[in-house]
Each structure stands twice: as structure tokens, then as C-alpha cells.
Amino acid sequence: MEAYGWGGLIALYPDRVEIRRVGFLHIVMDVLPLHIPRVDSSIFLDTITAIEVIRPLTMIEFVRFNYAGDPGNHGGYWASAFADNAVMMNLLDNRGFYRLIEAANALRRGQPLPESTIPIR
Image (cartoon, rainbow, N blue to C red):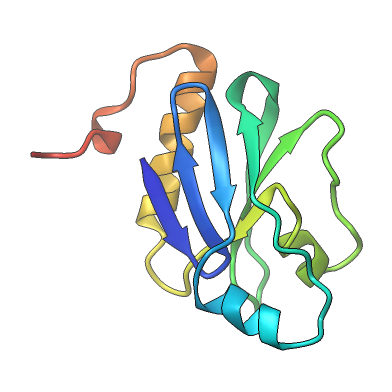
């Protein structure tokens, strides 16, 4: 299962979540001298302590996967949104992210996947 956003791609596997830094925003970040690292990461589901959706009033929402020893909040929106355990979502339609979060939480608890997350063929 995958969800694409401004900050990259989240891929959900039975044992882990992979965050890949792809897309237009990261091409722009490579061109600008902002010194934001472009790090892909994998986080095992059994190490995740919480999955948060951060909804700032005037900025793009982002999802953060908390785990023991994670970088946490670095003191600002941009630093938190570009952390190795976070991905900026889309401006309008984030249903794919919410389905992925629902499926990840079910896998973390050892429950079957909810029907809303199973693709229709």
C-alpha cells in the first residue's frame, strides 16, 4: 500500500513503513540552498509507538511515525515536516494517507486489515 504526498511517498509493508523522498518538492529542495537532507528511511512496525497527523492552521498537514529514539520535534514546522520519520501530505485529498495509517495501526496490533484499506479489483 502506498500514499503519495508533497513530501514524498510512504509505502506500507507487512513489517515496516518506508519513507521515500521523491517528487516535485524534493527537486525544488535540491535546487535551493536550504540544506535539508534527502534521507529515505524504513521504520519497523513493531518499533512505532504512535502515528500522528499534524494539522497546522496555515501549512500543509504531515504524518509523523513516532518511535523510541526518533528525532522528535526540532522546534519548527519545516524541521518537523522534513524529519526522517515524517512526510508532508497533500493540500486537498489525503484519503490515501488515512487509509494507510488505518492499515498500519491494524498491522501493529496484529489485527486483520480493515475492508476500507483493501483495494477493489
